[in-house]
Image: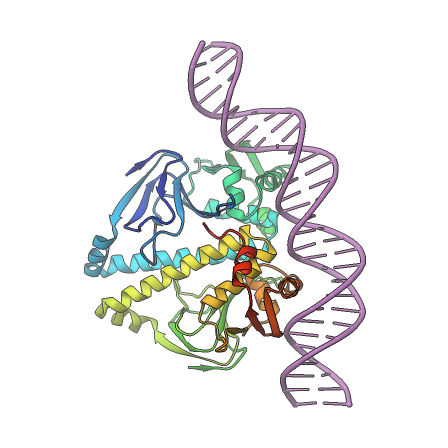
Length: 197
Length: 197
DNA sequence: CGTACAGTTGATAGTACTCAAGTTATGTGG
DNA sequence: CCACATAACTTGAGTACTATCAACTGTACG
């Protein structure tokens, strides 16, 4: 299934009939309240599972950040296939367990890290993820400052200030607003503060 | 396996050999940084799975809040049993999916709710959970203000002030520090703000 | 009875939010 | 190709919410 930038793959509350795997591009999963507040739960790149429901309905939205491509699996068929191939089933299980651990790490960040620490840790996480980068190691951010803010539980102004501060400290270089080059990973780690143990 | 109040069931970093089910009492799962900051990820009561690892090691601590009892399952054996009984396997799978959705809801609270909204939503969640209550509907909190603070990403003083405020508003009654009676659930819901849609 | 821990309440300070203006990018139609 | 409109981003000033520091109260336990 091909997706255009901005297109919505999953609506919160919709019947949960499919599970997807990202094959190209970047997506975001989010929850929004009716008064406009939004929390982004995860950014997803190639290789990740999307849309794991515990019951009949999805509990979050999933939208494409860039043009993207996902592979759709019918939920019922997936269960049959998994019953036949225990290896696939175990892969699926560890995949969800990893998502849970990421969610826990995220909870630690949201609850206990300062704005600067969150942004620093976010950049380090991005570098370790399958987020697109140039051959020289420059990160190409598919998300806006607003998206990052909604992911980190901050405002876009606070995120922008943190980026500017990192630049003025010489820790990162910002060739353009969507490009980040980490110049001093050690100092960035220090700014990210004590991790989850 | 019986546990005394305060006892640790799982240490972060330990080899992940077992999965548990709570049969009695209350536990907490948490991550701590070496500078003393702590984030509680979940409170667990009877019926819940504990200790779902994506790899060889646990990534959080689990301690008993009260005297408790858990049922231990060897991880390897559990997989064999699950291979035989697909029903159990599916229960396990939806159990982890539910935990993931709870974690997402929690992320929304930590990132986007005010202190008062977090406390109000927390009390409503507790009421809907298998947290112990008297026959008259009074919640018996097994955790301290500090625990609640570390769960909600606040300080214990802020939590205490929110409790006092709810009391003075007549929304709850506090027969003792560990007991909460919700007197006006509607107003409590309003104070919890717009939920995750 | 006294110590220790949990909780409450008050005063002050600080980090991040809000509001606002101005500056790039991006994309579209003339 | 340029002018314009729109969206994304940056920066500044003032405010507000929550954290911090501190004193005090209540309760459980030896």
